[in-house]
Amino acid sequence: MSQIDELQSRMTRALDRISKGVEALEAPQPALEPVDDGSAEEIARLNAALEDEKMANAQLEARVRSLHDQLEAQPEAPEPAEPDAALQEQIAAQREGMQALDGELQRLRQANDALLKSCTEMREALAENLGEPHLINQAMLAELEALRAARAAEAAEARAVLGALEPMLAQAAGEEEAAQ
Image (cartoon, rainbow, N blue to C red; front, top):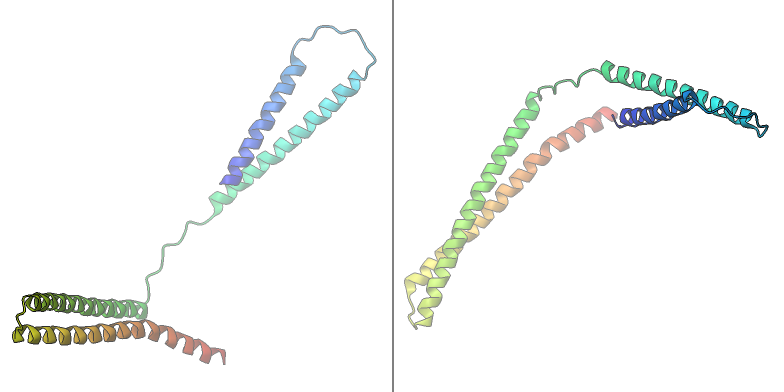
């Protein structure tokens, strides 16, 4: 489209120059005494320039017409094809893996919050010189849950990564076999 706009702009400028030149030639001019200073040569040169501009204008108009024809002849963009079933299954499996990973990460956050709360309670009890055995047990349980949640999150992340890699590896293996 920018080419069409550029060509149209050039054509408009050329037409303006041509019309100004024609107006200048058609305007009544006072009678001049014949002077042999080469004015006939100047008029011939200007007429040649005018003919050159007319030819350039005609070429530009033809180019614009051909560009418009090409734009009209271009087929409309085809609608995207439906993804195949294998790709849909792969996407669904990846979504499930990401949902599992998200669930494990939520569990890890909750366990870390419980651990932080337990540690805060233990610190407050120690600041008051109170050795509360149930706070120690609670902190140990929270720490164990946080470790289990971290391990489950890592496993879910590994499954998600493997789930994403397996189709690519299978495709690469298929391409390698086809190449041999």
